[in-house]
Image 1 (cartoon, one colour):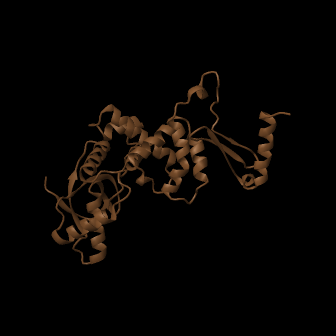
Image 2: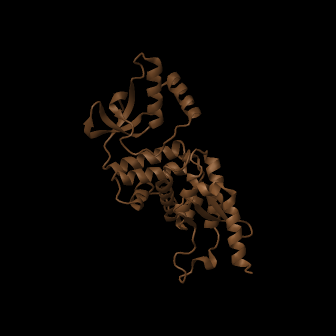
Image 3: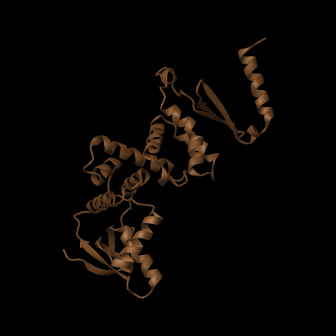
Length: 284
């Protein structure tokens, strides 16, 4: 197949849900310098849109970094030299096949983060390209075994639950994503979000430190706390109408009750709680 030159303006970069939400600045600078010096070594891949939306006539399958490099060079040079890009015009049998090609290409060139992998599966499902997360996982990662597909699906569930709650989530490690997935399976979603609301402008490391006690609880054996004879147990938190929230957290040798909300700012509340506990455990 022979590539053709296509004007940048005719290519829609996000025609498919992308599996790379962040482009590494250092790597992009190196690629831009390389393209400026020696040209594009490998054409991008596109397909002709069945319903063009001017000026877009083509959708991008793979080559987001290369397309971005050309766009930035075109903006910098403004001499028309980089206003077009070499592209293979593919005719995939289906959009899922095109997405699978994009995922495979990115895995080879620069591995995406676990958050980005989950975000791609979720986006493909929401866009109706796949009916379910299971179908998306199988369609975009056909070479993976069942265990790895289950992990990827769990990443998508983490993205769905925390996509608007975490700062710079694409920086989460694989281990951190697994811990969040375990917490969701343990039913800790609501209390995790309550904790994050107490740190609305915090960085990801600060948010993670706040979540660690709850994440540690998700990995421990619940023991007698979760038996069939105690429905609704364990209780993770209590929210009162006055705006007071009480959460429990596991410590090294027991449990901690954490109070938050307007009333918790007063030390008098703690005095009242001590009085109640004393009457409860040490009646006169």
